[in-house]
Length: 117
Image (cartoon, rainbow, N blue to C red; front, side):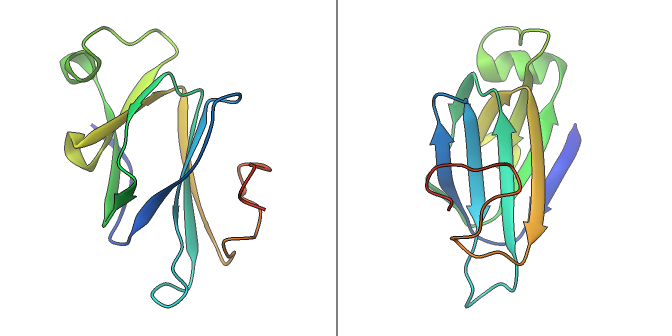
């Protein structure tokens, strides 16, 4: 499995846009962290996510694991991203993350998302 990233800090389900099929998980807590981290998933077709994660690891699932997670074969453009070793997952075309000095009102690097400023 290819690891996208792993962080020992709290993340929240920050935004999901049905019209753009974009999911944003955000770690922002100015009393605990000096930076903000956004993890974005594009063209989400399926997901099983929690509202909050005390820590977050994102990995690409491959082969049989991807099939077993979805209960079907992923389509050619889909990737199954496991959250915390399979406690949750996101089936999307892309996953990327960005760390910056922004706050909860600063726009995300991933575009002007409603509710993110």
